[in-house]
Image (cartoon, rainbow over all chains, first blue to last red; front, side, top):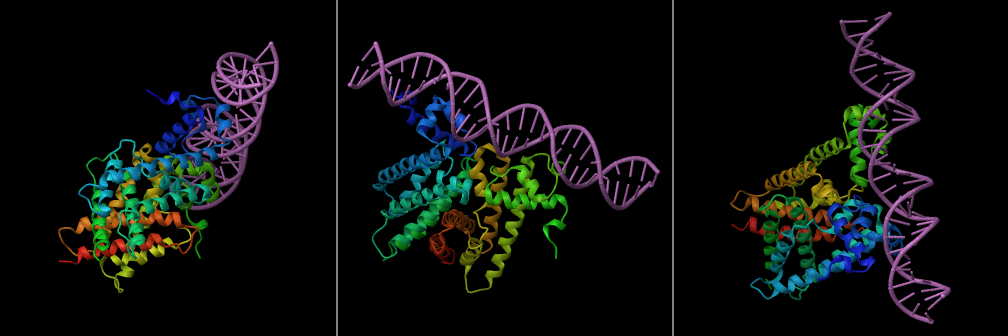
Length: 194
Length: 194
DNA sequence: CCCCATGTAGACAGACCTGTCCACATGTCT
DNA sequence: AGACATGTGGACAGGTCTGTCTACATGGGG
């Protein structure tokens, strides 16, 4: 068995920061807490990350890689099933929303927390969403409106995420996912009409 | 002419807090800054609001009333035009997104910033979104799926908001609104099919 | 005339935040 | 054996945060 304490310091710091930043918010999480929870010393931390600023950007990069890889994998798992085109997004989001650690999209949350006051972070968020659209586009048949539909589906995904975030602690609400499914039905019709 | 400085202290504090909280985020805005900008003293502030906690809740209430009233009014302004059903949401959101002070939805941002660590605020956010769905429903003809469609449209609105938030400082992007419009077209078709 | 609500300016306590610094331990490579 | 990278614990400085406090000004009503 490999626990977090086996891993090298830098990775311990990054994983701990990820969990805390994602759960409690970035500004609300002090460096001291990350250091204590990661089980490293302050010097070690600052040897690996010159500032909290740098840690935040590393966190976003790590989160991006981790989420995108999960997303692509989950879609592939669903692709073979009964669902057609965009519809396999539904069970994928459902899986995510039901994870007890779900706290919305880290990039939406970061943009909400910092706004224009942290342009580098905002740029990472933009790239993240762009990559998400690219993955969604693979679900659609080639056509002139393929990217437009993928973009629309991505807008719906983001809407479902923030709604699901408000529905936490309100189990069986599911209105976010229901609305999302209704939207996808309409988009799918446009995609497979011709 | 009536400027902000004519108004009574409590209102000055609330308006100032609104602008700062919305623009820079709640946690990032210190009480001292609100006090200085509102031009009141610390004692005056704490006489009207027992804590920052209370100010935040007052801010959310105020923002809710203000935004909902703008939203309902803007929809009514568009209702008579060429647009049918849900489609009048498009110019309304366009108007909002192009406001230079646009910084996303204050309630989504608050939920993103505090998550489950501030349940009273989360509750206000939920009510806000519920009211938004109610207003959207008025655009739709009576039917069995009316509320389902309104809910789906609201999901799309929230998605468009967070995407537009990422597109600030990237003028002429407009992909958020384009995707939103595509979604609405599909929903509208379902609404007016029977 | 005096009371009192309401306002001002600003010092202060106690907490937390980031980032630097010191003295010391341990294991690896030459 | 000695050099060096890498780690520890913890003190520290300088800043910001919330919330309380003192001392003082002003103006309207009994």
